[in-house]
Length: 278
Figure 1 (cartoon, rainbow, N blue to C red):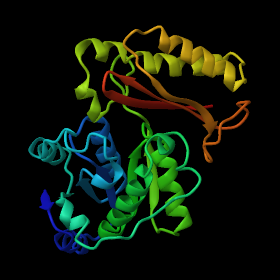
Figure 2 (figure 1 turned 30 degrees about the horizontal axis):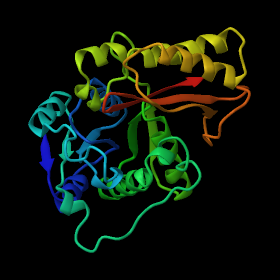
Figure 3 (figure 1 turned 60 degrees about the vertical axis):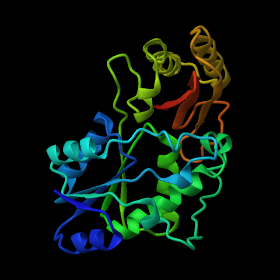
């Protein structure tokens, strides 16, 4: 497995690849969810490139960029075990050199949910993904469904800008109690970790209500909110959404594909999760 730390090295490695290439973009501190993306890429392509880059431009000034968990040696060992061909692991100044001032804004779908809570977040996400796509030149790029709004944003960017690649969305990988795997789960205390299972329970409640014939989105939101608020360690609910799967506009009636998503705080840790209906 090769480790490329500069854009020139990554491009040189890419020129040597003869066959289809998959890209797995990550911010490191890998868990099983990331490794499943790599396995999907290995299955679909001759070569797999994984990127490890904690992207500063998608963090707000009061967010956790400085303390975001990092363990590049462990990450590389895991990716080598998965037979990833190249790990692109650039320093910040390689991706954002002095004078950098070009950004990608995806309007509409970035203005709700995470975008409303974290202004500028998706500008950073879209810009860094655009750069990675240009540097690696993959045929396919792999993202987890856990970051549902990010998936919508990246798919729209790829479509609107006529990018010659396929965005592959892989189902959320969960712990035994349903909690979505996330690098930020390490921040949770044991009690908070146990309490966080209520997120998947509330999403499952919405799915069960839908299966039983409920189509009124507000009734589903109310039921989910009530369940979360029964958990004493569940802090503020940043949002609880039942939205159109493509536009992310809130629905009154769930009569077409929808994303049920939420963001809830447990102490200082903010967790997101989602499911799709139907």
